[in-house]
Image (tube, rainbow, N blue to C red; front, side):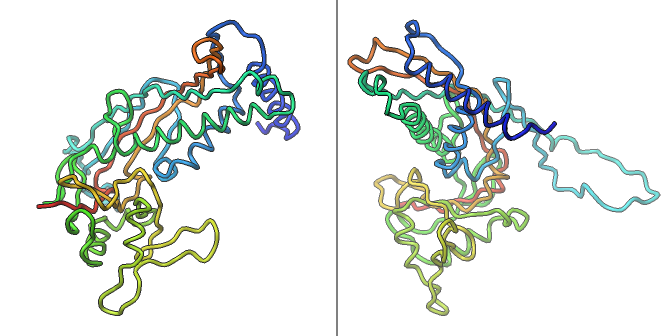
Length: 319
């Protein structure tokens, strides 16, 4: 059923008034409410825009505390032409299930009494922006390094195999020692590791630190830069023809660790699944952060790698 646009506008305005009344009102201590739908949806959309990993991954909304994902690793032909021969499905062992559990994420923006009492201040927008930026930062970092116990399981928490593809490991290509990528050929090799069926939608994911060096690498055969700058705002730069996504949570090139992964080449829509509840709860606490008023916002979200073939890693290690 199509809802008239005027009704949508009225609903949004009503939600905004409810949210503002909650922020400025005299609620009892530690009273918790669910954010109005339009406010929660606005925060969720902004978080997705601010989180490089989330903007690339598959996001599914659920009402439960976990999302079950069916995985089919059978490489046999699963389509074709019907013949008179009997079709048999003998190998069902390649079909499995991954359960992605949702974990609680919080943000704690604070405001002064003076700001809440100022009728000219857009305090609701201030609170929304603080919740958005705090949650986006925590989410994006967890999608890379989360332990999978109290937060989503991060891509780089899995073992990296530099000796070919292995079960439940990210396949990687060694490109030199920490601090430097030796050759453009390693970038080409990494790109060629990704199966062709995942190339549509694939992108490079790297920190700004890694990008500053990679953008200067040239094709040794013709002297041309591998990196092509964007010609318009909103269109990403490309490397070897594929878009570059800057993610500052990715490891830097210069590191004292034995091994680091500064670059991913991946189709994260196929490779990484995020599950979350659309509901965001908020608690107003005027006592525990004096002289400020603290708002404790929570939501539930989880994530995990669901297809290791769709993610490849550039590895730098000392030995």
